[in-house]
Length: 104
Image 1 (cartoon, rainbow, N blue to C red):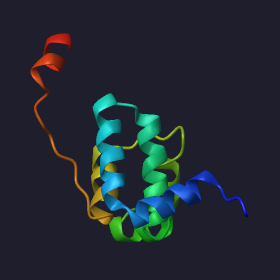
Image 2 (image 1 turned 30 degrees about the vertical axis):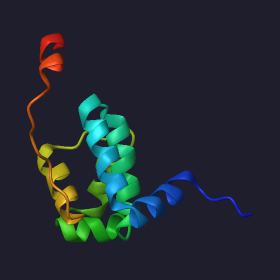
Image 3 (image 1 turned 135 degrees about the vertical axis):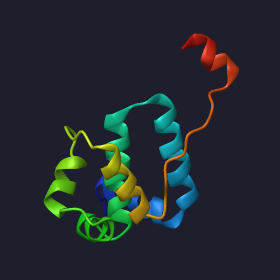
Image 4 (image 1 turned 180 degrees about the vertical axis):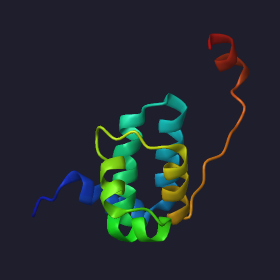
C-alpha cells in the first residue's frame, strides 16, 4: 500500500464527505484555534481544486492566499469570508449555550 501525505488524504476525505468538513470547521470555531483552522482551510482548498483555483474563485492573489493559509498566517475576516464563499460555505454567528456563557 502506497502512503500519501496527510493533507492529501484529508482533502480527499473532505471532497467525499463535505458534511465532515463542516463539522470539523464548526468544532474548530468553537474552540477558537486559528492554527488548526488554517490547516483545515488549506486541506479544503486542496479539496476544491487547489489554492490557485480557490484564489481565482475568491478573487484573491494566489501568493497572498498561500501566505494567509500558512502556519503563521493571520487572515483578515474578509479573506476568510472570501475563501469560504469560494468553497460554497459561510460563517454564521450563534448564541453560546447558557453553560458556556457563565464560564466566559
